Image (cartoon, rainbow over all chains, first blue to last red; front, top):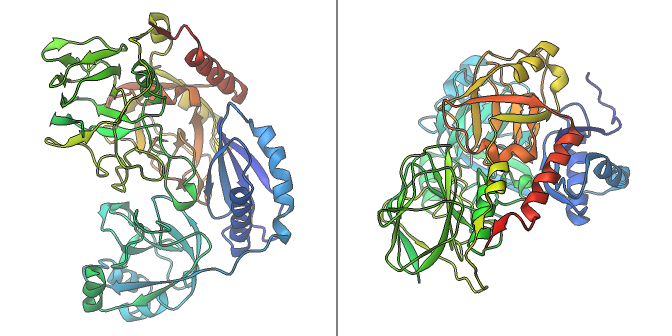
Length: 232
Length: 313
């Protein structure tokens, strides 16, 4: 199953109006970059009849108008795009800093996560806020970025029973993924902190603070700083 | 500015049009009417383009006072509509005088009814659509379901209008189905043959936990052949995903854009509108069709919608 070499793209019909294009078989930076390149190409040189694009770790779901295209037609139209991925350049990633107040009421699972890994809470915070993460894609809910690059010591099993309502701005770890909940939604990730920064604002341009491909760093802040930033 | 006054909101009434496509890359799903067929026909009956925003009511309808004269059509399920106490026919255009109150009760058939108004509901579009995205509180009327006392603005209508009704023949052929047709899902081969047969052989019940995001099914659990690691991928409207519990969830209009559960099947496009009419505790069954058949069923449905016999004047 696990291959790290770039394999040929695989196609699979997901429904009568969507096609999945797999550009790899694992979560890896290289696969993410191929997804991002294909997404950018399809955005800058759109194919008639494509309605929507859902990027993920190593695949792109393409939703199309079934009255104008079928899977085979779309697949053949994609071939030239796929042939260009290896030489297609990517722009330098944007750098985004997200201030996070870790622990306490904002991160109710921080002590559990620390215990799980035999660390102190401070060590978890230090580890979580040290790497530069990559936004592999946005999914689940508006502005929800799936971040790659969680330190190998931090993966944490999801909660057995997901919370019905995770407070907006919560920072969580779910398996080897980490991210920020832009809205108060149900969620099963372990919550270790919260950001006062809005992740999705309809009056902002772009609306989503995070974009696919961004580099992200978390900065630990105090409760006082959280209150200051939240008031702005 | 002319408006309608919400005297009673009903159980869950939102502004919906045909949704917003193209924002998957920022995690925003299409949303839009749960029964897009009823919305489109309602709009045609009042002289609107198909995708104009209307009110979508769920299980129990509300009461709305018109602050100006208007033309309306009520489509979808039968919520016992009335105008100033007099019963109203459905699937036909009706003229309303200023001050008239249109009232709905509890559903007598399926889950959703639409109040379509000539000129449409005027709300500020979010990402090009008036649809309410309830989870994120975006779009529609202040990003939420209507409440008592809300004043919902109406759009202007300039094009000529003629009274019309849906033809009885079209109404019959567009009845919501109880047996939903599906194609194979992208992970169909992860399931044992017996599980795939169970999906199409058994009767499931719509769970009370169902909403515009997902329709949860109760019934004999569906087993995966072997536990395999699934990498989160994009998910399509109508995908039937199977979490470890074995109780399938159909991803619906306000779906998440990506998901990590294997999908055993996918509801065909021609049957999505029927999904919007299932109520909690209703029974649902599935029938597998080939991709080519799914496509021709959609083409047939659209041909009916485009035909001259659809609407009678």
